[in-house]
Length: 392
Image 1 (cartoon, rainbow, N blue to C red):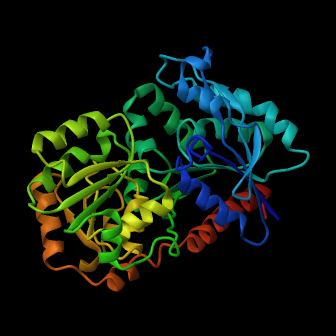
Image 2 (cartoon, rainbow, N blue to C red):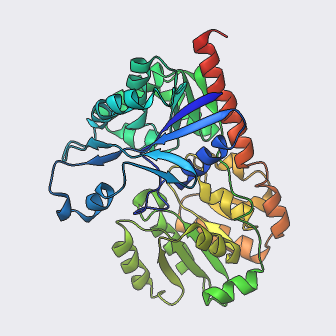
């Protein structure tokens, strides 16, 4: 029996059902394997302030300390989030909060390995906890943890030290693995295990009927991603504004909503470009199946789930050459890799609208990216770390 403690500050809860849903899906696939037992620790960082003044923190504080979440046992301990510190104390605060909690858990769940699902603050905290409980540690890089957090020197040092100390490292793309090695992490202990996609939920449908259900009669471009600068939604709005009669639906929420709404209005495209807000997974599946093209103009990625979900839906993609783009766009049916400019995005979208690939041909390219394959590789990786620690 392999007992895995999954540590993830990215994990859904009642107030954020889509937050880190890819971590939940991976964990459920791992827990479904024979000979594996999993428990999840999804910590909540809360400031030492009156929480009722901050709706976001109040919602986090209201979450139960322990619950069953889609069949997974999930612990939600609190750790101290110190305001105005840029997050640099999060790992130490997280490790301090978890040490007594894991000591109390261990008699009933003698975990063999800690699997940290994001590099910061999870990774440095996991390394400290691994030493405290004498178990191996794996840390997974997903993209923004390497590309964004390492822009802050104090945090970058913590990330690199954790990567050097961990027993094993994972990346979601080969390009991200190269970036980790360039930072000084050990290549010989770093494996690429790409994400999975739910091929049952994301599948081709009657595209015309799906469009009618959305009230759209012409060509449709979909985009899925948080409304933050990294995702480049402003570039995509500029691109679609150049394509008369083409509709754009952006699924996601975030601090850029007001600015993007103003940009749509400035183009005079409010009748065909819209922000849909945060959508449930089933609604995202409907949107992607209705779309003729899925486009995302990210400045950096690991390997975006939205790319794979679109392909599984039979919808080709237009994306810049970032992260694992070349691991996904491996044939013309998958779509286009383009420069990250409105002009290039518009040209890529127009080319696919003019000569759309068959949905079945697009979907075939997503079939290697299953959660079953992901969990098999993850099981082997974590089991190998435990075996190496035991000398077996």
